[in-house]
Image (tube, rainbow, N blue to C red; front, side, top):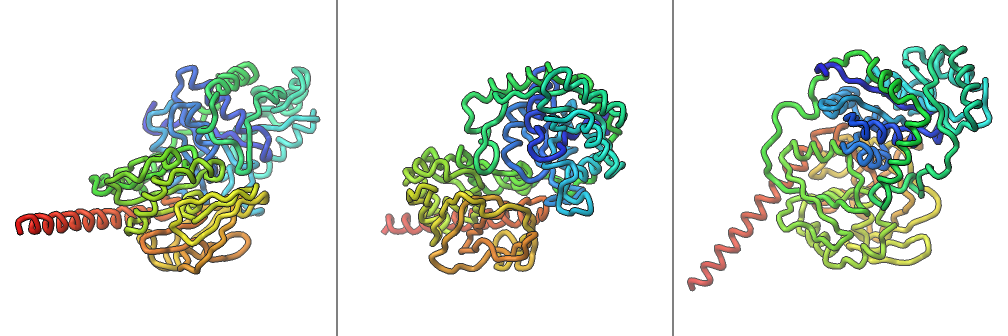
Amino acid sequence: MSAADRPRLVVAGVHSGAGKTTLTLGLLAALARQGIRVQAFKAGPDYIDPSFHTVATGRTARNLDTWMMPAAAVQEVFWRATADADMALVEGVMGLFDGQDPFSNRGSTAELSLFLQAPVLLVLDARSMARSAAAVVKGFQVLDPAVRLAGVIANRVGSSSHLELIRAAVEDACGIPVLGGLPRQPELTLPERHLGLVPAVEHTALNRMLDDLAAAVTAAVDVPRVVALARSAPPLPEPDAQLFAGQAQPPRAVIAVAQDEAFHFYYPENLELLAWCGAQLRPFRPLHGEPVPADADGLYLGGGFPEQFAAQLSAQRAALASIRTSVQAGMPTLAECGGLMLLAEELVDRQGNVYPLAGVLPLRVRMQERRAALGYREAEALTPSFLLAAGERVRGHEYHYSTAEWRAELPPAYRVTSRRGAAQEGVVCGNLVAGYTHIHFASNPAAAQRWVNACANYRQRRVQGRTLTAGRDQEGGKA
Protein backbone atom coordinates (compact mmCIF):
# COMPACT_ATOMS: atom_id res chain seq x y z
CA MET A 1 0.00 0.00 0.00
CA SER A 2 1.44 3.36 -1.04
CA ALA A 3 1.79 6.20 1.46
CA ALA A 4 -1.34 7.95 0.15
CA ASP A 5 -3.36 4.77 -0.34
CA ARG A 6 -5.73 4.48 2.62
CA PRO A 7 -8.69 2.17 1.81
CA ARG A 8 -11.54 3.43 3.96
CA LEU A 9 -15.27 3.27 4.42
CA VAL A 10 -17.74 5.05 6.70
CA VAL A 11 -20.63 2.96 8.08
CA ALA A 12 -23.54 5.35 8.65
CA GLY A 13 -27.14 4.87 9.74
CA VAL A 14 -30.38 6.45 8.64
CA HIS A 15 -30.99 7.11 12.34
CA SER A 16 -29.74 6.09 15.78
CA GLY A 17 -30.56 2.45 16.42
CA ALA A 18 -30.57 1.51 12.73
CA GLY A 19 -27.99 -1.20 13.43
CA LYS A 20 -24.66 0.37 12.53
CA THR A 21 -22.85 -0.85 15.66
CA THR A 22 -23.95 -4.45 15.12
CA LEU A 23 -22.98 -4.32 11.45
CA THR A 24 -19.68 -2.57 12.14
CA LEU A 25 -18.67 -5.07 14.81
CA GLY A 26 -19.63 -7.98 12.57
CA LEU A 27 -17.63 -6.55 9.67
CA LEU A 28 -14.62 -5.80 11.86
CA ALA A 29 -14.65 -9.30 13.34
CA ALA A 30 -15.15 -10.94 9.94
CA LEU A 31 -12.32 -8.96 8.33
CA ALA A 32 -9.93 -9.55 11.23
CA ARG A 33 -10.64 -13.29 11.12
CA GLN A 34 -9.66 -13.22 7.43
CA GLY A 35 -6.28 -11.79 8.36
CA ILE A 36 -7.11 -8.28 7.16
CA ARG A 37 -5.54 -5.57 9.30
CA VAL A 38 -8.55 -3.32 9.76
CA GLN A 39 -8.31 -0.09 11.74
CA ALA A 40 -11.54 0.93 13.45
CA PHE A 41 -12.73 4.43 14.24
CA LYS A 42 -15.84 5.86 15.90
CA ALA A 43 -17.37 9.16 14.86
CA GLY A 44 -18.20 11.38 17.81
CA PRO A 45 -17.14 11.36 21.47
CA ASP A 46 -18.37 7.89 22.52
CA TYR A 47 -15.92 5.77 24.56
CA ILE A 48 -17.85 2.50 24.65
CA ASP A 49 -18.18 1.48 20.99
CA PRO A 50 -14.42 1.83 20.42
CA SER A 51 -13.78 -0.60 23.27
CA PHE A 52 -15.65 -3.26 21.28
CA HIS A 53 -13.84 -2.27 18.08
CA THR A 54 -10.51 -2.73 19.82
CA VAL A 55 -11.36 -6.28 20.89
CA ALA A 56 -12.75 -7.15 17.46
CA THR A 57 -9.64 -6.02 15.58
CA GLY A 58 -6.82 -6.37 18.09
CA ARG A 59 -5.92 -2.73 17.32
CA THR A 60 -6.62 0.38 19.40
CA ALA A 61 -9.77 2.00 18.05
CA ARG A 62 -9.90 5.79 17.76
CA ASN A 63 -12.47 8.57 17.93
CA LEU A 64 -12.78 11.00 15.05
CA ASP A 65 -14.84 13.94 16.25
CA THR A 66 -15.23 16.88 13.90
CA TRP A 67 -16.47 19.18 16.67
CA MET A 68 -13.98 18.46 19.47
CA MET A 69 -11.05 18.15 17.05
CA PRO A 70 -9.97 20.58 14.30
CA ALA A 71 -10.21 19.14 10.78
CA ALA A 72 -6.42 18.90 10.56
CA ALA A 73 -6.32 16.88 13.79
CA VAL A 74 -9.00 14.50 12.52
CA GLN A 75 -6.95 13.88 9.40
CA GLU A 76 -3.71 13.47 11.39
CA VAL A 77 -5.23 10.95 13.80
CA PHE A 78 -6.65 8.97 10.88
CA TRP A 79 -3.35 9.04 8.96
CA ARG A 80 -1.22 7.93 11.91
CA ALA A 81 -3.54 5.09 12.89
CA THR A 82 -3.86 3.66 9.37
CA ALA A 83 -0.15 3.69 8.51
CA ASP A 84 0.14 -0.10 8.89
CA ALA A 85 -3.49 -1.07 8.22
CA ASP A 86 -4.98 -2.76 5.16
CA MET A 87 -8.18 -0.74 5.45
CA ALA A 88 -10.15 1.49 7.79
CA LEU A 89 -13.75 1.21 8.91
CA VAL A 90 -15.38 4.23 10.56
CA GLU A 91 -18.60 3.74 12.52
CA GLY A 92 -20.77 6.83 12.32
CA VAL A 93 -22.88 8.45 15.02
CA MET A 94 -26.67 8.95 15.02
CA GLY A 95 -28.02 9.40 11.48
CA LEU A 96 -25.69 10.27 8.62
CA PHE A 97 -26.56 13.98 8.62
CA ASP A 98 -27.26 14.46 12.35
CA GLY A 99 -24.83 16.86 14.02
CA GLN A 100 -24.61 20.25 15.69
CA ASP A 101 -26.60 22.24 13.19
CA PRO A 102 -29.97 21.56 11.48
CA PHE A 103 -28.83 23.64 8.48
CA SER A 104 -25.41 22.08 7.79
CA ASN A 105 -23.27 18.96 8.20
CA ARG A 106 -21.35 20.46 11.14
CA GLY A 107 -20.39 17.75 13.63
CA SER A 108 -22.03 14.95 11.64
CA THR A 109 -20.92 11.66 10.15
CA ALA A 110 -21.46 13.27 6.73
CA GLU A 111 -18.93 15.97 7.56
CA LEU A 112 -16.43 13.34 8.68
CA SER A 113 -16.87 11.42 5.42
CA LEU A 114 -16.07 14.62 3.52
CA PHE A 115 -12.99 15.31 5.67
CA LEU A 116 -11.74 11.80 4.89
CA GLN A 117 -12.97 11.69 1.28
CA ALA A 118 -14.49 8.35 2.25
CA PRO A 119 -17.35 6.44 0.62
CA VAL A 120 -20.38 5.80 2.83
CA LEU A 121 -22.13 2.48 3.46
CA LEU A 122 -25.65 3.30 4.65
CA VAL A 123 -27.41 1.01 7.14
CA LEU A 124 -31.16 1.03 6.56
CA ASP A 125 -33.64 -0.24 9.13
CA ALA A 126 -35.90 -2.18 6.73
CA ARG A 127 -38.64 -3.29 9.09
CA SER A 128 -42.12 -2.99 7.53
CA MET A 129 -40.66 -1.42 4.38
CA ALA A 130 -40.40 -2.34 0.71
CA ARG A 131 -40.23 0.25 -2.12
CA SER A 132 -40.27 3.02 0.47
CA ALA A 133 -36.69 2.00 1.20
CA ALA A 134 -35.75 3.54 -2.13
CA ALA A 135 -37.37 6.83 -1.12
CA VAL A 136 -35.37 6.88 2.11
CA VAL A 137 -32.08 6.16 0.35
CA LYS A 138 -32.87 8.68 -2.41
CA GLY A 139 -33.43 11.34 0.24
CA PHE A 140 -30.00 10.65 1.70
CA GLN A 141 -28.48 10.86 -1.78
CA VAL A 142 -29.94 14.23 -2.70
CA LEU A 143 -29.63 16.09 0.63
CA ASP A 144 -25.91 16.58 0.00
CA PRO A 145 -24.62 15.10 -3.28
CA ALA A 146 -21.03 15.80 -2.19
CA VAL A 147 -21.35 12.95 0.33
CA ARG A 148 -20.54 9.79 -1.63
CA LEU A 149 -23.23 7.25 -0.79
CA ALA A 150 -21.67 4.07 -2.19
CA GLY A 151 -23.77 1.20 -0.90
CA VAL A 152 -26.60 0.07 1.35
CA ILE A 153 -27.03 -2.68 3.93
CA ALA A 154 -30.60 -3.52 4.94
CA ASN A 155 -31.03 -4.42 8.61
CA ARG A 156 -33.81 -6.38 10.30
CA VAL A 157 -35.12 -7.86 7.05
CA GLY A 158 -37.95 -10.35 7.44
CA SER A 159 -36.90 -12.87 4.78
CA SER A 160 -34.81 -13.36 1.66
CA SER A 161 -37.76 -12.26 -0.52
CA HIS A 162 -38.12 -9.12 1.61
CA LEU A 163 -34.43 -8.34 0.99
CA GLU A 164 -34.86 -8.84 -2.76
CA LEU A 165 -37.76 -6.36 -2.83
CA ILE A 166 -35.59 -3.78 -1.13
CA ARG A 167 -32.61 -4.53 -3.34
CA ALA A 168 -34.63 -4.16 -6.54
CA ALA A 169 -36.25 -0.90 -5.43
CA VAL A 170 -33.07 0.76 -4.17
CA GLU A 171 -30.82 -0.29 -7.03
CA ASP A 172 -33.39 0.77 -9.64
CA ALA A 173 -34.23 4.17 -8.12
CA CYS A 174 -30.86 5.09 -6.60
CA GLY A 175 -28.26 3.36 -8.74
CA ILE A 176 -26.21 2.07 -5.83
CA PRO A 177 -25.79 -1.54 -4.70
CA VAL A 178 -27.51 -3.23 -1.77
CA LEU A 179 -24.69 -5.39 -0.41
CA GLY A 180 -26.78 -7.58 1.87
CA GLY A 181 -29.37 -7.71 4.57
CA LEU A 182 -29.14 -8.77 8.19
CA PRO A 183 -32.16 -10.71 9.43
CA ARG A 184 -33.88 -9.99 12.70
CA GLN A 185 -31.72 -11.79 15.26
CA PRO A 186 -32.49 -10.69 18.84
CA GLU A 187 -29.74 -12.97 20.15
CA LEU A 188 -27.16 -10.73 18.46
CA THR A 189 -28.40 -7.61 20.26
CA LEU A 190 -25.73 -6.09 22.48
CA PRO A 191 -26.68 -5.48 26.14
CA GLU A 192 -27.20 -1.86 27.17
CA ARG A 193 -27.59 0.26 30.29
CA HIS A 194 -27.85 3.97 31.10
CA LEU A 195 -24.81 5.23 29.17
CA GLY A 196 -25.32 2.94 26.17
CA LEU A 197 -23.74 -0.45 25.58
CA VAL A 198 -22.30 -2.33 28.52
CA PRO A 199 -18.53 -1.77 28.02
CA ALA A 200 -16.41 -4.48 26.46
CA VAL A 201 -14.26 -4.71 29.60
CA GLU A 202 -17.26 -6.14 31.50
CA HIS A 203 -18.17 -8.86 28.99
CA THR A 204 -17.15 -12.37 29.96
CA ALA A 205 -17.99 -14.00 26.60
CA LEU A 206 -17.17 -11.18 24.18
CA ASN A 207 -15.02 -13.23 21.81
CA ARG A 208 -17.79 -15.79 21.38
CA MET A 209 -20.27 -12.99 20.67
CA LEU A 210 -17.88 -11.51 18.10
CA ASP A 211 -17.54 -14.94 16.46
CA ASP A 212 -21.34 -15.08 16.17
CA LEU A 213 -21.49 -11.58 14.72
CA ALA A 214 -18.73 -12.36 12.24
CA ALA A 215 -20.56 -15.48 11.11
CA ALA A 216 -23.88 -13.64 10.76
CA VAL A 217 -22.37 -10.80 8.73
CA THR A 218 -20.35 -13.15 6.53
CA ALA A 219 -23.53 -15.08 5.72
CA ALA A 220 -25.70 -12.01 5.10
CA VAL A 221 -23.36 -9.41 3.57
CA ASP A 222 -21.12 -9.43 0.49
CA VAL A 223 -17.96 -8.73 2.49
CA PRO A 224 -15.59 -8.75 -0.55
CA ARG A 225 -17.70 -5.99 -2.15
CA VAL A 226 -17.52 -4.01 1.10
CA VAL A 227 -13.73 -4.25 0.91
CA ALA A 228 -13.87 -3.18 -2.75
CA LEU A 229 -15.88 -0.10 -1.77
CA ALA A 230 -13.21 0.80 0.78
CA ARG A 231 -10.52 0.39 -1.87
CA SER A 232 -12.43 2.72 -4.19
CA ALA A 233 -11.62 5.69 -1.94
CA PRO A 234 -9.29 8.17 -3.65
CA PRO A 235 -5.67 8.67 -2.54
CA LEU A 236 -5.51 10.70 0.65
CA PRO A 237 -2.88 13.46 0.90
CA GLU A 238 -0.66 13.26 3.96
CA PRO A 239 -1.69 15.97 6.45
CA ASP A 240 0.76 18.26 8.18
CA ALA A 241 1.56 17.07 11.70
CA GLN A 242 0.14 19.41 14.31
CA LEU A 243 -0.61 17.25 17.34
CA PHE A 244 2.54 15.14 17.07
CA ALA A 245 4.89 17.56 15.37
CA GLY A 246 8.68 17.35 15.62
CA GLN A 247 10.24 14.87 18.02
CA ALA A 248 8.77 13.31 21.11
CA GLN A 249 10.26 14.64 24.34
CA PRO A 250 12.27 12.27 26.55
CA PRO A 251 10.53 10.92 29.67
CA ARG A 252 10.70 13.36 32.55
CA ALA A 253 7.67 12.61 34.72
CA VAL A 254 5.36 9.72 35.61
CA ILE A 255 1.59 10.09 35.38
CA ALA A 256 -0.47 7.38 37.05
CA VAL A 257 -3.63 6.50 35.10
CA ALA A 258 -6.58 4.75 36.77
CA GLN A 259 -7.47 1.90 34.40
CA ASP A 260 -9.82 -0.91 35.39
CA GLU A 261 -13.47 -1.91 34.98
CA ALA A 262 -14.63 1.24 36.78
CA PHE A 263 -12.30 3.75 35.07
CA HIS A 264 -11.49 3.31 31.40
CA PHE A 265 -12.84 6.31 29.49
CA TYR A 266 -9.73 7.82 27.90
CA TYR A 267 -9.15 9.08 24.39
CA PRO A 268 -6.00 7.33 23.08
CA GLU A 269 -4.69 10.63 21.74
CA ASN A 270 -4.92 12.20 25.21
CA LEU A 271 -2.65 9.51 26.59
CA GLU A 272 -0.36 9.59 23.57
CA LEU A 273 -0.02 13.37 23.70
CA LEU A 274 0.99 13.15 27.36
CA ALA A 275 3.61 10.55 26.42
CA TRP A 276 4.74 12.70 23.47
CA CYS A 277 5.26 15.60 25.88
CA GLY A 278 7.48 13.52 28.16
CA ALA A 279 5.17 11.57 30.48
CA GLN A 280 5.62 7.93 31.35
CA LEU A 281 2.12 6.52 31.84
CA ARG A 282 1.72 4.11 34.73
CA PRO A 283 -1.66 2.30 34.86
CA PHE A 284 -3.06 1.26 38.22
CA ARG A 285 -6.33 -0.36 39.31
CA PRO A 286 -7.98 1.33 42.28
CA LEU A 287 -11.00 -0.99 41.96
CA HIS A 288 -8.68 -3.90 42.77
CA GLY A 289 -6.96 -2.17 45.66
CA GLU A 290 -3.87 -0.94 43.83
CA PRO A 291 -2.57 2.32 45.31
CA VAL A 292 -1.17 5.24 43.34
CA PRO A 293 2.28 4.08 42.13
CA ALA A 294 5.06 5.25 44.41
CA ASP A 295 6.95 6.99 41.59
CA ALA A 296 3.92 8.94 40.31
CA ASP A 297 4.26 12.69 39.69
CA GLY A 298 0.76 13.19 38.29
CA LEU A 299 -2.62 11.52 38.47
CA TYR A 300 -5.22 10.99 35.73
CA LEU A 301 -8.61 9.78 36.97
CA GLY A 302 -10.77 9.24 33.90
CA GLY A 303 -14.42 8.41 33.50
CA GLY A 304 -16.17 5.09 33.57
CA PHE A 305 -18.73 3.39 35.77
CA PRO A 306 -17.75 3.76 39.44
CA GLU A 307 -21.47 3.56 40.30
CA GLN A 308 -21.61 -0.02 38.99
CA PHE A 309 -18.82 -1.04 41.38
CA ALA A 310 -19.52 1.29 44.29
CA ALA A 311 -19.41 -1.37 47.03
CA GLN A 312 -16.15 -2.91 45.79
CA LEU A 313 -14.58 0.49 45.23
CA SER A 314 -15.61 1.78 48.66
CA ALA A 315 -13.98 -1.25 50.29
CA GLN A 316 -10.54 -0.41 48.86
CA ARG A 317 -9.62 1.90 51.72
CA ALA A 318 -5.85 1.76 51.22
CA ALA A 319 -6.13 2.60 47.52
CA LEU A 320 -8.55 5.45 48.25
CA ALA A 321 -6.24 6.76 50.98
CA SER A 322 -3.31 6.77 48.53
CA ILE A 323 -5.34 8.86 46.08
CA ARG A 324 -6.34 11.27 48.84
CA THR A 325 -2.75 11.58 50.07
CA SER A 326 -1.42 12.16 46.55
CA VAL A 327 -3.91 14.92 45.75
CA GLN A 328 -3.47 16.60 49.11
CA ALA A 329 0.33 16.54 48.62
CA GLY A 330 -0.12 18.72 45.53
CA MET A 331 0.28 16.10 42.80
CA PRO A 332 -1.11 17.60 39.54
CA THR A 333 -4.37 15.68 39.11
CA LEU A 334 -7.06 15.71 36.44
CA ALA A 335 -10.32 13.98 37.40
CA GLU A 336 -13.10 13.67 34.82
CA CYS A 337 -16.67 12.52 35.48
CA GLY A 338 -16.11 9.10 37.08
CA GLY A 339 -12.82 10.45 38.42
CA LEU A 340 -14.69 13.36 40.01
CA MET A 341 -17.09 10.86 41.58
CA LEU A 342 -14.15 8.89 42.96
CA LEU A 343 -12.89 11.97 44.81
CA ALA A 344 -16.24 12.60 46.52
CA GLU A 345 -16.88 11.94 50.19
CA GLU A 346 -19.63 9.51 49.28
CA LEU A 347 -21.73 8.12 46.46
CA VAL A 348 -25.45 7.44 46.80
CA ASP A 349 -26.75 4.83 44.36
CA ARG A 350 -30.25 4.57 42.89
CA GLN A 351 -31.40 2.38 45.77
CA GLY A 352 -30.28 4.92 48.36
CA ASN A 353 -27.20 2.97 49.50
CA VAL A 354 -24.36 5.24 50.61
CA TYR A 355 -20.73 4.36 49.84
CA PRO A 356 -17.79 6.35 51.26
CA LEU A 357 -15.13 7.13 48.64
CA ALA A 358 -11.81 9.01 48.60
CA GLY A 359 -13.08 12.08 50.47
CA VAL A 360 -10.83 14.55 48.68
CA LEU A 361 -13.66 16.93 47.80
CA PRO A 362 -16.56 18.21 49.96
CA LEU A 363 -18.99 16.45 47.66
CA ARG A 364 -21.81 13.93 47.70
CA VAL A 365 -22.58 12.30 44.34
CA ARG A 366 -26.11 11.02 43.86
CA MET A 367 -27.20 8.67 41.06
CA GLN A 368 -30.60 9.24 39.48
CA GLU A 369 -32.83 7.54 36.93
CA ARG A 370 -32.98 10.53 34.62
CA ARG A 371 -30.00 11.64 32.58
CA ALA A 372 -28.35 14.67 34.17
CA ALA A 373 -26.29 15.90 31.22
CA LEU A 374 -25.50 15.00 27.62
CA GLY A 375 -23.71 16.96 24.93
CA TYR A 376 -20.66 18.81 23.73
CA ARG A 377 -19.02 21.44 25.89
CA GLU A 378 -16.68 24.30 25.12
CA ALA A 379 -14.92 25.01 28.39
CA GLU A 380 -13.32 28.35 29.18
CA ALA A 381 -11.01 28.29 32.21
CA LEU A 382 -12.31 30.54 34.98
CA THR A 383 -9.61 29.65 37.51
CA PRO A 384 -6.01 29.24 36.32
CA SER A 385 -4.53 25.81 36.89
CA PHE A 386 -1.69 23.55 35.79
CA LEU A 387 -3.92 22.65 32.82
CA LEU A 388 -5.27 25.93 31.47
CA ALA A 389 -4.56 29.63 31.88
CA ALA A 390 -7.53 31.82 32.76
CA GLY A 391 -9.58 32.46 29.64
CA GLU A 392 -8.03 29.57 27.73
CA ARG A 393 -10.44 27.17 26.05
CA VAL A 394 -10.72 23.46 25.47
CA ARG A 395 -13.48 21.29 24.01
CA GLY A 396 -15.08 18.15 25.35
CA HIS A 397 -18.38 16.57 26.29
CA GLU A 398 -20.56 15.48 29.22
CA TYR A 399 -22.69 12.39 29.67
CA HIS A 400 -23.77 11.27 33.13
CA TYR A 401 -26.68 10.26 35.31
CA SER A 402 -25.28 11.57 38.58
CA THR A 403 -25.63 14.95 40.25
CA ALA A 404 -23.10 16.71 42.45
CA GLU A 405 -24.14 18.04 45.86
CA TRP A 406 -21.36 20.35 47.01
CA ARG A 407 -20.95 20.90 50.76
CA ALA A 408 -18.57 23.83 50.36
CA GLU A 409 -17.87 26.39 47.67
CA LEU A 410 -14.65 25.96 45.66
CA PRO A 411 -13.24 27.98 42.73
CA PRO A 412 -14.93 26.83 39.49
CA ALA A 413 -12.79 25.21 36.82
CA TYR A 414 -14.69 26.21 33.70
CA ARG A 415 -17.45 28.23 32.16
CA VAL A 416 -18.96 25.64 29.83
CA THR A 417 -21.07 26.54 26.84
CA SER A 418 -23.58 24.13 25.35
CA ARG A 419 -26.78 24.27 23.35
CA ARG A 420 -28.63 25.21 26.53
CA GLY A 421 -26.42 28.18 27.32
CA ALA A 422 -23.53 28.68 29.71
CA ALA A 423 -22.84 27.51 33.25
CA GLN A 424 -19.99 27.05 35.71
CA GLU A 425 -18.60 23.53 35.90
CA GLY A 426 -15.96 21.68 37.88
CA VAL A 427 -13.54 22.91 40.53
CA VAL A 428 -9.91 23.85 40.93
CA CYS A 429 -8.50 22.97 44.32
CA GLY A 430 -4.74 23.31 44.75
CA ASN A 431 -3.19 21.19 42.01
CA LEU A 432 -6.47 19.39 41.29
CA VAL A 433 -8.76 20.05 38.33
CA ALA A 434 -11.98 18.06 38.59
CA GLY A 435 -15.29 18.16 36.76
CA TYR A 436 -17.83 16.28 34.71
CA THR A 437 -16.44 17.48 31.37
CA HIS A 438 -14.35 14.97 29.41
CA ILE A 439 -11.84 17.13 27.56
CA HIS A 440 -10.00 16.26 24.37
CA PHE A 441 -6.42 17.52 24.22
CA ALA A 442 -6.58 17.67 20.41
CA SER A 443 -8.67 20.82 20.88
CA ASN A 444 -5.82 22.42 22.84
CA PRO A 445 -2.57 20.39 22.80
CA ALA A 446 -0.85 23.00 24.97
CA ALA A 447 -2.90 21.69 27.92
CA ALA A 448 -1.12 18.32 27.70
CA GLN A 449 2.28 20.02 27.53
CA ARG A 450 1.46 22.25 30.50
CA TRP A 451 0.33 19.26 32.58
CA VAL A 452 3.52 17.31 31.93
CA ASN A 453 5.56 20.40 32.79
CA ALA A 454 3.71 20.66 36.11
CA CYS A 455 4.35 16.97 36.81
CA ALA A 456 8.05 17.38 36.04
CA ASN A 457 8.22 20.33 38.44
CA TYR A 458 6.42 18.32 41.10
CA ARG A 459 8.90 15.49 40.59
CA GLN A 460 11.82 17.86 41.00
CA ARG A 461 10.40 19.27 44.23
CA ARG A 462 9.71 15.76 45.50
CA VAL A 463 13.26 14.58 44.73
CA GLN A 464 14.75 17.71 46.27
CA GLY A 465 12.60 17.19 49.36
CA ARG A 466 13.85 13.62 49.75
CA THR A 467 17.43 14.81 49.29
CA LEU A 468 17.03 17.49 51.96
CA THR A 469 15.41 15.01 54.33
CA ALA A 470 18.18 12.47 53.74
CA GLY A 471 20.78 15.19 54.36
CA ARG A 472 19.18 16.18 57.66
CA ASP A 473 19.01 12.52 58.70
CA GLN A 474 22.71 12.08 57.93
CA GLU A 475 23.60 15.21 59.89
CA GLY A 476 21.53 13.98 62.78
CA GLY A 477 23.24 10.61 62.65
CA LYS A 478 26.67 12.23 62.72
CA ALA A 479 25.72 14.32 65.67
